[in-house]
Image (cartoon, rainbow, N blue to C red; front, side, top):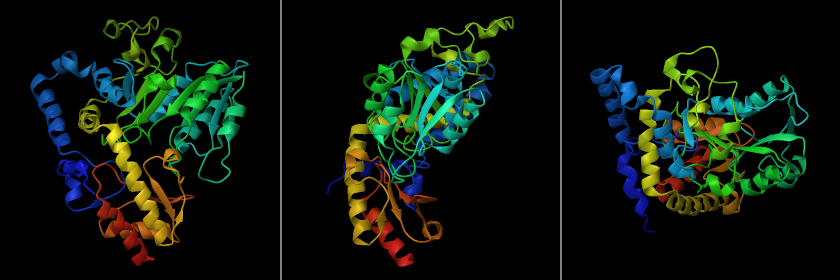
Length: 380
């Protein structure tokens, strides 16, 4: 089958010698990222302190706009941070968890980093309702919906579950949250860049994710979306001088929050990570998430068929409309199998309670899917 997207393969150096099926964990580095990081060092070397006023200071917004184009956010509605934990903590700090409306609804298959934060909120008075999975693959939508009531302050769920790649009905959850006056935080880490998204159409209040995976932006560049009409009412306790209306006045007497999305920043921004991340965002936008999704569905369908033909157990949703970009297969000694695949320059990963996660991206070839399943069979 003709595949126009494989024309992008030369942009990613690691593909020359490696079967790279691990973009759900760390996307391949674009060739142009080296040039972007060189531009950072050249700017620092030549402009020194002047670089702040010549662009560095606004990078959390200007780079955030590159993410915004991918996730359907408006200009100035996304700010960059180091990681999702910081983004989540900023939003959590906007709420009074000792009030009667202090319930936080989430799912047990959420990413552990988020769950650790929710456990911490319990020490501040939050009542955390953690909806258990019945099959270890999906989170029961009807139970999530039923748990959201008039005492719910925040619903915090993953759009795509990291272990199984199960795709949740974010619109239904958002509608229910708003019906009872609650807010919703969507972790879109495992969907942004491989599943089409539009924050404004979904109506979510907050969304967060990072650049490590499908966005091919590398580590240290998380992002936070906050619905624009909520800005004036939110005053994070997790904050810093970059969030001040006049940060260079150095007025320590009181905190006056910036009127734009910088009010959701903290301290000095991670400039080199944002330079590194830009290339991935640009490429994903150039390729187009709709095209990426179409190829992802086709290749994950092929991967499931190959795995089933080989007799492997599938640990992800079968319906492509219920699945993100990863296929999880369960084989005995999956961790050891994954290590041996890496020795053979075939990169996938293993997660306890799930299995071997295999993730083709827009730059993957069908032959690589056939190869990974064949090699797993040989190793077994």
